[in-house]
Amino acid sequence: SPVRPNPLAALRASLRALEESGGKSPAYLSFGGLDTYLGEALRFGALHEAGGPSATLFIVLVLARTRGRILWCAPGWSDNRLYPPGLVQLGLDPARIVLVRLARAEDLLHAAHEGLRAGWQVVLELDKPLGLIQARRLQLAAEEGGGIGLVTRGCAEPSREGAENIIAQFPQG
Image (cartoon, rainbow, N blue to C red):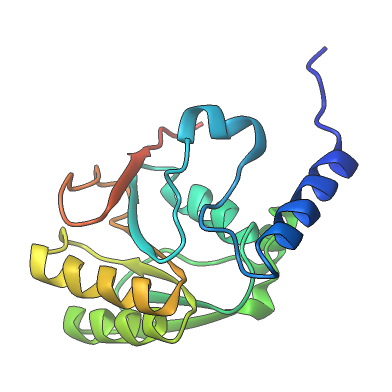
């Protein structure tokens, strides 16, 4: 049988880290046992990209480990729907999410930029890869606000350029 992590030990470690940081958010998002594989890949104040059929699941799991408000920027034509009972089962309070559906990609980018500058965690769903200038603007906004920016193009493979870190293409399963 697999070894189960000790939630009390994880809580103590989190509290110790919070005390050592003077109450500031950690620089990196920790995933316990997955840190061996991810390292310090999910840095606060940065833009990241995830792709593949399970990218939305991965993003929700990431957001469940953060604090504060979440701005989810989705195109109006997207069929990707957030299911509140499912979010709760994954540990994410749907009340933290402000869902914005806009028709134009430029409007989505502007909303994501403003959310990142304000320090929110931001998800940006796109149908095309970010251009280098767009990615750089979002990266600077994330650095200024200190939140995590997560870009996805649904099932499409990550673009390999633009975002600070390409987390992975997550297979379905």
